[in-house]
Length: 66
Image (cartoon, rainbow, N blue to C red; front, side, top):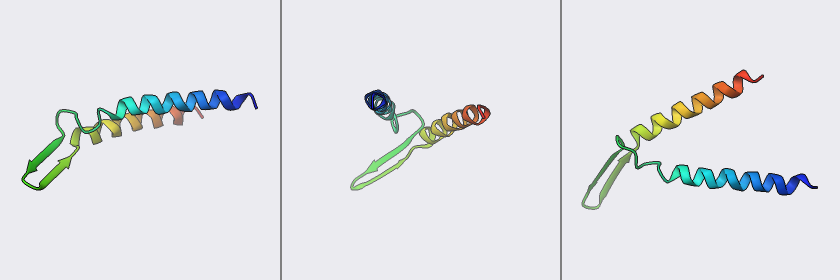
């Protein structure tokens, strides 16, 4: 029962950090944002590349731990 508060604290810290990181999503240079009249087009090119690289690195690190 004493592990539960520790898990909640870690989960809260992870969610807080994720919230800070996701504020940048979609605002990176290279993301396409076009607004004309009532039509808005958004394509996060660089954001997709950054997320792909980060996930690739994390999965490689965790894959080598086995």
